[in-house]
Picture 1 (cartoon, rainbow, N blue to C red):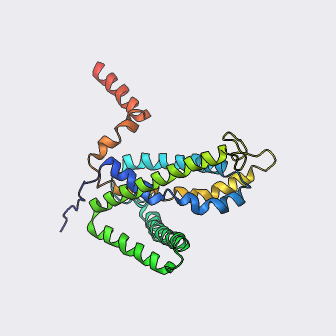
Picture 2 (cartoon, rainbow, N blue to C red):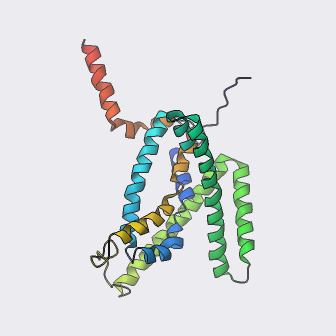
Picture 3 (tube, rainbow, N blue to C red):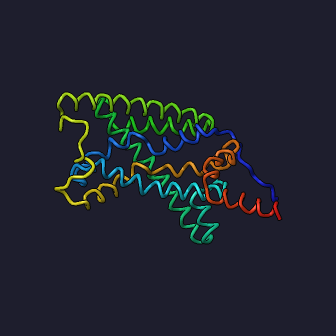
Length: 250
């Protein structure tokens, strides 16, 4: 039977963005800050900016490939279509390992943090509870998952906002350097730039997961419409209209 299997296009752009943020786990910054601060010699902000620049190139590449191949599969599909099925097979397994290990890390961090807050409850209990909740949400389907992600991302953003406000108040009151504008967290002239690079190599972990958005290419409502803005500013858009004008005037 050669029936084409199509997925239900039930996700909005907001839902997909929420999925990306949920995969990235916005509060990962708290689990890597201590190690990053040590590796970068205190230049964590500079390391984050460098990591962001690098990941923006990756995100742009994913955006271009998603427009060319708007089907599920993400990097597996892109590699399989552009390079070959053999390399695509290897990339597919690499992605599978990525999606296997990232939840494991998140479950572990969840257990560590909550067992520290509630020492009377064993860490294994928190991990098992989270696994049950995540499994239930996934079994219920993509719409329930989208709603759960919006809730998780909303709570994370609220937590980060409160944390930033309290941090600013603490700095103004004299904690740390006692000033909001300070170049040293970005780059310290007394330290080598290689420490910033070393910190960025670790902090790329904070961006892992955003590529999962491309796996929902066949589940987004009006996928072509979502790409309109980026396509409008692309060189391909202008070449298309340029050639059309030539042909129409000929």
